[in-house]
Length: 128
Image 1 (cartoon, rainbow, N blue to C red):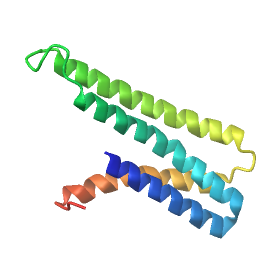
Image 2 (cartoon, rainbow, N blue to C red):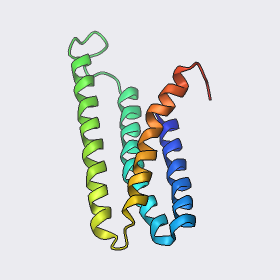
Image 3 (cartoon, rainbow, N blue to C red):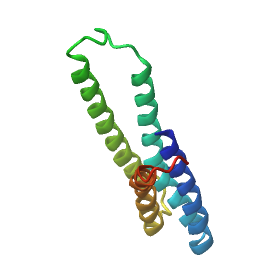
């Protein structure tokens, strides 16, 4: 999961540089804010999953409710990730007065496209 976050961070930086070169500093900042609005919640979710995986099950491995608790924890984490992503996008849009919306939106699309691309890449037997 952290591999995807690293790819998203790299995509954010690359998009920021490209936006800055094509449309100036405001576009670079807009791209950076858009990318971070997606990457930061994903990093926190990856951390949540890592911690959950390392914690022992409260009822032991034989606990029949352990799977339900794990699924609910995953669902709650995913919900919080989506909520935080939307909240950060809204905050960025309100707080940065010089927002270049195309730069922000295109970066968000690029960063979110990294996840399925990384899964597909890994699904082809690649171990990179």
